Amino acid sequence: MSDTPASELSQNEQDAMAAEWEAALAQQAATPLATSEPDPFDAPPAPRAMPAPFANFAPTPEGGAGNDLNMVLDIPVQLTVELGRTRIPIKHILQLAQGSVIELDAQAGEPMDVLVNGYLIAQGEVVVVNDKFGIRLTDIVTPSERMRRLSRGG
Image 1 (spheres, rainbow, N blue to C red):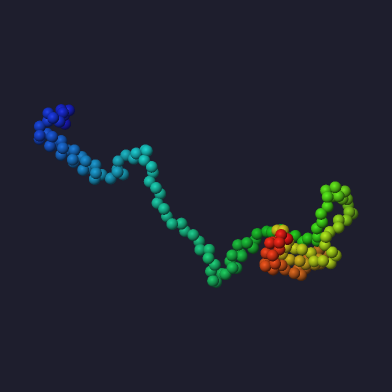
Image 2: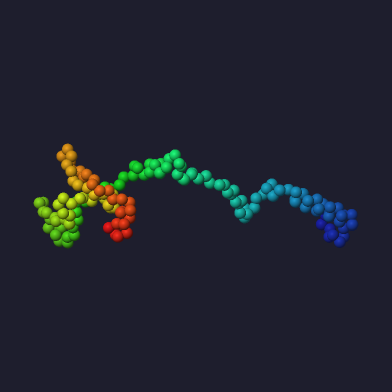
């Protein structure tokens, strides 16, 4: 090709040049973009979305609630047996010494409260077994009673 202006080219030369351009444009259109150099300013292609696998957490008829309960059986909780409570000022606590007696709000022979993580679950009486103190449960708090006590605030 020459650098001659198009007005000075003969008709045959102009037709040849037009055919050349047409062939080049047709070849460019037929070539996929993937074979050309990637443009560094183009955004990367979006990743293909795949469905995530989820375990079936619905209870099965053969397992029932027992399988769900097995998941929490080894979790440690704080069990407390409460003999009674009292409220005293700090100045009286500072005066406590060995042999001091603190009066509690519970009566002698009254059932002791059994709490799990601070929530009342049962009541019982003190027993001695092999020189160790224990508690014999005499009353288990029902779930409905626990809810009623929670709503009343204790």
